Image 1 (cartoon, helix red, strand yellow):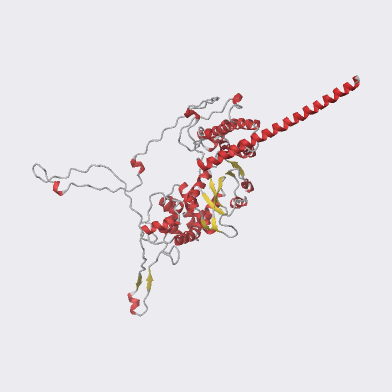
Image 2 (image 1 turned 30 degrees about the vertical axis):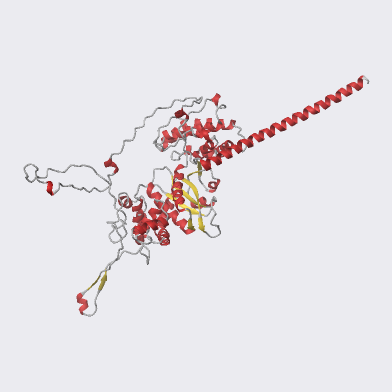
Length: 559
């Protein structure tokens, strides 16, 4: 073999070896990619399995055990000094303060007659006085009475002599519902039990039987629906007119079920929407609205005419509401990072609540050079908790002062948060990626609360109202008809608005039913029955009173 042939052979061998090496490198690259995908799939499946375990066997709420500070675990952190503040411990309420609104009846316990003579000289003893020994609370159970109205008729005796008697009949209070024994008090009781105490009709039916009255649940439902539409809907409309005139509102929605609705199966999901006023210092208004779906056209229609800031979650349906500034809820963003944590780690972390009375230390965020060492979801949670902590310090400040303090204290935290977010590269499909995407997709709306001191950092105000409905839904399970769901929306609106206005809820429902038969078509009368009117404040902020305020003996509305 010549030297040239040997060179060609060596060259061929080298090329074959280089090809094999390239092929091996390509195979290694492909295998590494597959391994990366498998690791991501494994992580996602582990997260999914853990979530299923938590849902089936664990606690669903965000409540957690004490933080790592309480368990003695140490995390490398950077401590930042803040202004110290003191908070006075609430004084334990005295019994006289707790029961100040209750009427007092004194029961005197005299010495028995056989012991009123002196045991030594047998002389009659005189009363020296009474001393206070103890007190107790007594309750008089509800009772149902049959009230029969007897109308007096008077006749002129002189005219009667001429064979032409003049007759005059006494006025009689109008019936709440024609041809029905329903009264303002019993209908108010049914509404109060159903929407305030979350007691469904079938339980009320049993309760009525214990009081001696057989009132079928169908009858109670009929009274409820008719009274809601005839007497409370005019007030609901007036509240709606006032709601859209405000500058800051909250909105949320909660699913419900209606058995009989045209075009829908009984198993399909409907929604109860909640709209309420924000922290603007004015009289609160809380309105529920039933709708068969969750489309954005529903809040768009309900909030027509509203031009302000709408606080909501990240649901895209609210984007259809025109001429508003959306303010996204940071609690929803924080929840995404919380759910991205391993279950065991969740038990050691604390979620800050602005309205909690519990004293908590300021959340600590790892130093810049240690951010890579801490779990990313935990860092995201720490940033959110820091913002909630700062908000808690500003809770009692005025609107303008709060806005200025937010700009000074919270914008630097947001800037650090977004800088940290931009550096992350979460595993595709993981819960951390979902949390990061949620934050990035709502970058602007999450920070819009900084524009107005009346805005809040979260939409928890609306979520608490959704919870009021969800508790009742858990007991009643479903609505029988769309009309029933609409009536429930009206009465829930009355109950929650009365609660927020610090009214006696039953007394307010009763008072409206007492007067609306006479004034349902008079705007001036409806104005006097709104939750913030002086008349309502006077008659619905004390104890329940159905004895002196009755259909036949009630004070006149100050029209």
